[in-house]
Length: 137
Image (cartoon, helix red, strand yellow):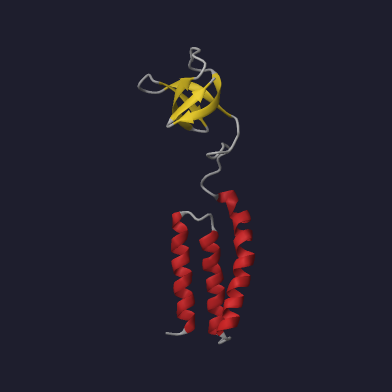
């Protein structure tokens, strides 16, 4: 096998790995491997191929992450686990008549921390989650 075959296989593997959702990191490494493949096609020494790969990865990874984040499937404004951010939601009744809270197009079961009565149509502040149940004040 020629050296460029290894670079091509590495590029394909990394781009398939991106399907697991690595935040464009594996995709950037796959593109860098393709650039390393072109270096191998020009018969440069292996040490230079690795240098070309490393430089391409160092440039492509942050650039792609910043550029392609705009089109990432998850554009949520809500907090991730462990982050401290206020979430607001709208109380509504689902098709089964159960009270739920709608937060950014997702609905969750709801429970009041303070014991006050929850009325559909009111906006509430979510203070946390207990499993899949949103806790509101």
